[in-house]
Amino acid sequence: MFKKILIANRGEIAMRIIRTCKEMGIKTVAVYSKADAESLHVRFADEAVCIGPAASSESYLKMSNIIAAAEITNADAIHPGYGFLSENAKFSKICQEHDIKFIGASAKMIDQMGDKASAKATMKAAGVPTIPGSEGLLASFKEAQTLAKEIGYPVMLKATAGGGGKGMRAVWKPEELEKAWESARQESKAAFGNDGMYMEKLIEEPRHIEIQVVGDSKGKACHLSERDCSVQRRHQKLTEETPSPFMTTELRKKMGEAAVKAAEYIKYEGAGTIEFLVDKHKNFYFMEMNTRIQVEHPITEQVIDYDLIEEQIKVAFGEKISGKNYFPKLHSIECRINAEDPYNDFRPSPGVITTLHFPGGHGVRLDTHVYSGYVIPPHYDSMIAKLITTAQTREAAINKMKRALEEFVIEGVKTTIPFHLKLMSHPEYIQGNYTTKFMETFSMEE
Image (tube, rainbow, N blue to C red; front, side, top):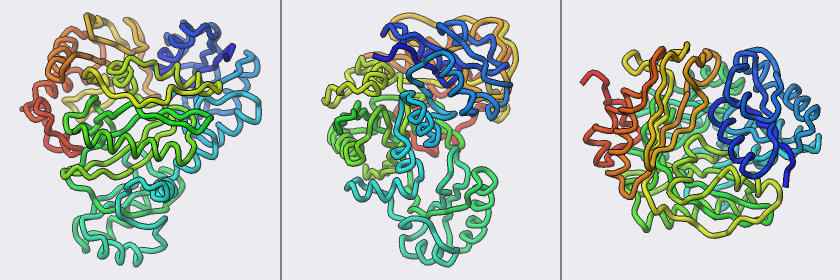
């Protein structure tokens, strides 16, 4: 097994990886920016190396500094967590060139699945249902016009290099297409340096349902069932649950089989997620693949009693997966607790946590890196904790989440706890009637 793993990340995911490494008897190296010197992952790792100033571009995204930290500490593997360099093909390749195992997808796999247009073509070839739309990138506005007419409005314009909702435009009528085409291209060019666009049929009343997969170096894959991530704001997930209240046994079986087929077709190695859009008629379409661990992986761990980080590490070392598909025995919900003000358009709220009280009790899990007196820096993602409740039924998991949220005290900064409390009492959410459009009509004021 690996002797020492460097964690090329920060915050709660760095803590999460350190915990599993300790349980496996593997030494850990934390890397940190100057802004994170007082962070818990620095304190709990066996060794810690400062890799630069606060800006991500000068620290957590600085490949040369991370490789240097791995070399001076003799780390034989790097776990990238999620975000930052976790889906960076160049970084995966550099690790390989330096004989350091990248605990994630190979450069080829990231390239194959990271570009949305090529990922869609690959999935089509694998026989996985894909959304009707352009074959590869659109060459011109005229081609976009012709295709939109062919597949029928509404359509969705998407930037091939997009992420976080940038470069995406829904177009409902032919006369709106040109304006949407121009603005999406400009936004994508500014954000990603690439204005390549493709088009898809807009799926109405969509659910965002993803299937967790794990593949090994022997070409075998299995799935660990689904997660429903439909409650989103500006394409950012707010809460997730498993099993999905929308799912049927038949649909779960079909989607699970499609995800395994996709993973085995590309000989995927490691933990990954096949993301689908599911329409109101329960037709499902491949959307994208995340070739890394997901923020919401704990709910899957809770319902099938399975350590996904441990599995990632074992697979990276060359061990075989169990090969069996898993189905949820319990119900689990995750609320992302962000340092944001839900009463003020979710404006970020960095600063000092003056008072802190964590919830506890049976079926309550909290993944976090914060403590009383911790300074939330303004430079990174605003998520400071993930609260997960697990119970025998969905109703019980919701009631447990309400109770845990009421117990959760964070003072000194604004957080999304009041939003989640309101969500857990929302009649449509309680009934499981929500789509990716849910937040468009949700209000904190009611």
